[in-house]
Length: 342
Picture 1: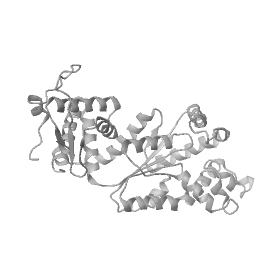
Picture 2: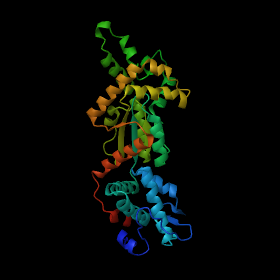
Picture 3: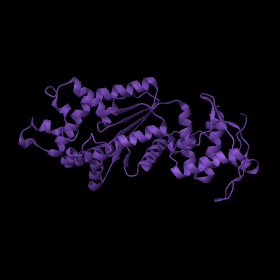
Picture 4: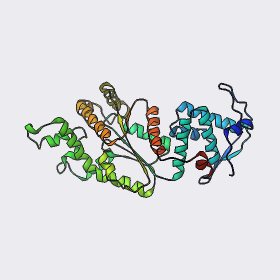
């Protein structure tokens, strides 16, 4: 491809930009083939294109509008095939004109990262009821990530291997692991906040080797991973290889109103009957206290804290956080990203 056309060139020729609210007169619907250097030829998928835009941090309605604009203009221009680089470049121009320069920049940064082949590891942490597994699943669907790992599952496997008699703290919940330590201390030594933190850290230490093994294998295989769980602590990040080119993005989810967190915990018994909420509500004060500790640790280690409200908004904010981090070392031009990658 010798030259990438500008949006102005397309506007003046086969790609008229119509005023807001006006429908573009379309040619007869046709099949547009997208040619990829790595994946071969496939039909243009509006759903896939829109999902890619949402992964780049574009709001759902804007992603849908942009996909429709690009697709309809291709049809109007009589296009029957297009390569992925030209499609990416035209999408970038559409975002720049129809949405915002910031949205276009995020799309550009994300496109460059996708082409780089570097692994991505998203680590979603938070206390009980903050929506870790829900958000992790939504991210996996949006990013087509097939490898997911829960630290709860790692702990469950370890429980089958080590009896409660030998290691009782492993068989408690994260929010009441302190009770095992309390039995080993005199009443004069009790400090609820310190004990809760110590109990939680003890569990983190027990799970750290398994968590590190999962991440290190992911790095060796150069695949994408989403790991979620309360036991994702900054101490795990400190032990990972420092010479990797992977992007490792820890995110702390939080619910800052006691009432809202209680409602989320109650909802667990509806959405996942096997996870009865009554036990968690009985220990709600400890769960709330654990969240305070986790948030202070996130502040201390500069891990982004994202408040969990609407699922789509949280997923979008996580992706924007990741992409904005990538943008700090980004200097490529649109031509460099799209022209020279094909």
